[in-house]
Length: 632
Image 1 (tube, helix red, strand yellow):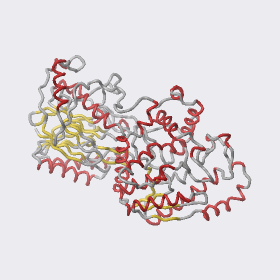
Image 2 (tube, one colour):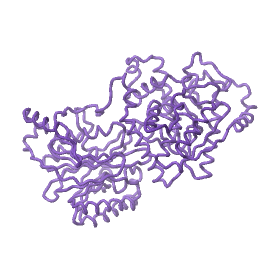
Image 3 (tube, one colour):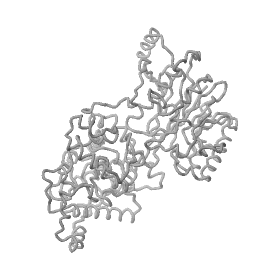
Image 4 (spheres, one colour):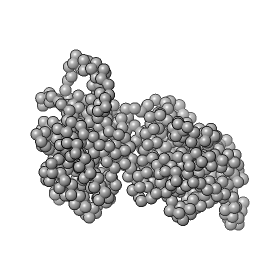
């Protein structure tokens, strides 16, 4: 049997485009002589549809699309993902379903059992868990058909009470097919392959795992669909961050007796045979068909589900800036920008280019995603901007070939100061160096980490007037000429509230909001790997907001390598203060950083969508109270 994998980029709610793409995939599979073609989770409507699922019209269009696809499933089997109505009155009205269509009929429907309700997932809000498990016969084979999370209930601390494959294996299936919409983060591809391989080793069945690709607002799907044979060997791996298609014959297997799969549904492997098999596999080399043998000795399940993560606290920075991770992050951000603009019907971006590393990386990524001609940079120097910041930003745009403007804000800023002077007068709040963050609605108290917290002539209110003046100018240009403003704030700044609401926190999409400062520098180095695009001076000068004379980020924040280390452990790994202090980090620094994070939640709640590249990004995947006392 030949099975085609169609890894496609869908658009939520765009039924016409999604259906057309699926029909094109069917025609391609027919031309390649495939018996069956498999598409991804909720491919008909796009994933995640969220509250659109509450509209009967939306569900009706899903069913109409299924009818169109069914007419093309004549001489070929087709597996697609779409919601299915629940005929039982009790429970939710819908299932998340995989449909097998053949001979213009619905031959079988599998309902997703394990409904994720964590991080960016909210499926139990809409769907009823599957409660019946039946293999689906097709051309003399029995298919165990599951959906995404259904194969993740492994390890010694399973999240769900039911494992669908434990039910399906009792019906002696010949193969497993899993349709998925598994989001990207920079080590999740290793997670997925480990999960698929562990299912293969547990049930002794080959698996076709078909994953979505493309970006839906903040969530990026990276593709990487895989086929494993029954011995745990990687037979085929599709491309990442782009659409792909492959026809893979069903790998040959000798099915074990069902009794051998008990207890625990595992098979004891003969050690002599296993060692011989490993020697053969190690001697094998990848070929043009994409075979990538994996030795069966790698059968210990990684309970942490982060098989490539360095858990040594001293090596966190090394892990965050690992070259392989940075390459993936770069591809994910480019895809996120491109799909956001294309699917929203936008074409042009505008960026405030400061001569700093964050705006430089954002500008370079936007040019790569949209083309330099479609990205406009605006340089907005004040009297506190250094001359090299302007020249660095100009050189960057010349290197990239994008249009740019220089608009000085000195007169605008002075006009604002003059207007507010009768009210500001000699108010102590204007300097504000010792003001507590919990009461600070402007950027983080920038003297918080400086010695003595001395006030300067330029206080927080005055600093923020500059930032908001810049925001107003860029947004004015965006409105006038039809641009979408890209935000340039990084995750380190967003975590600590080091930014100005309605100023440098403005924008329609955040490119670097899930990228720590150290990773921003690593991205810049990756962008420059084939020649200097980002001027070297941008990468060597001390980071600064340049809102007052001689200002540096280090006046207000710890060294970024220390800051990122604490933030990563707290946000991604959910380590508490005692655990962080036990890592050897100064207690006062730990408690101040955590306070900054938690008291800045109200600012992040007003922020734009952030392209998600980590396992815990700000936005829909991290839900903490705004009004709360914990660690604040």
